[in-house]
Image (cartoon, rainbow over all chains, first blue to last red; front, side, top):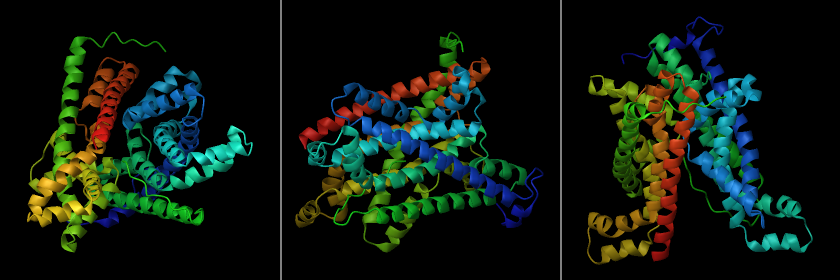
Length: 241
Length: 221
């Protein structure tokens, strides 16, 4: 490996971006945007699918929700990203004009939605049945007792697994390198090749991934503290990948 | 779009896909066994109560878990050849990477499994005069393994999916097989679709089996 040469980050990659460190910051920006946008997609879809899997008296909706989860959980993320990027625009001409960024956000968002749906389902089912009945008893519609009784508690229960899922989404965004999104892995590969200073590039990217994970972790800890219901203790969640 | 799956004839399957499938399965099995072995060691280090064993293991496990797998794959592909002093192919590099990476994840599973065994079991083992290693080998680990079996197998299914990420260093796995076949015959869309179907069928059937096993173990306990 030889000696370190951190000044490599001040060199000019010879493109629109004047230095390598600015390119790195831009790549981090891509990683963060892909991750956050996917997280929004995943939260919206995951919540919908998670809720319909627990609806009473609607077996077909429940089956649809289960199928959704199995479909997106049992195909590797890399394959899903390739499907969204190469196959979906060809199959549905409406989506042909979409930029790669949107396609990757959909891929990562749909993939993660299955996992959030699974967490929300188990969160809802962990609540005592009495809460549901109490909501029904005071005359709430199904929408109302989900909105005002079940979901506020269920979301609090699943904050620990949601935390690790948000950290996972940052790690999983790295797979987007395969379809030419200029995020950090792609930066590491290209800049490493151009400068022959692979170790320095990998180090910088690795550190930024760790910092991103820590920031997310702190934000979620803050959210958890902020929304805590006094006297209501939830069990810790388990991690995934 | 017209799908044309006819080019997936037997020569294509045996020429492109089986080789990749073989490597994916081999990588999964080796990484699972190696990961469980080193993961158990890491878990024992973390539970040893000795900070000189606990701390390095904790740093290793948390470090591995906070970096994306793709980054780890790239790191090992860069570092392993410089460490052993000669170039190795992406396949060997992938094997070493996955054992090292999965050890971190399996160690967390093992740790939870060992901690799920009531303290009384440890005390009982000590009371009948067993040494630490006897106690672990004969009393704690067999029970922990059984408690953890469903989670271990689920992790193995995730691992099988993750093997597709060796794409980053160009190792020839199942996905690479589909990718190459699709590109060679000018039918990438069909190849990716078929890859998704094959992965889905394999992973779904495996997770179905794990679910059944889970139910079976749950009844006995």
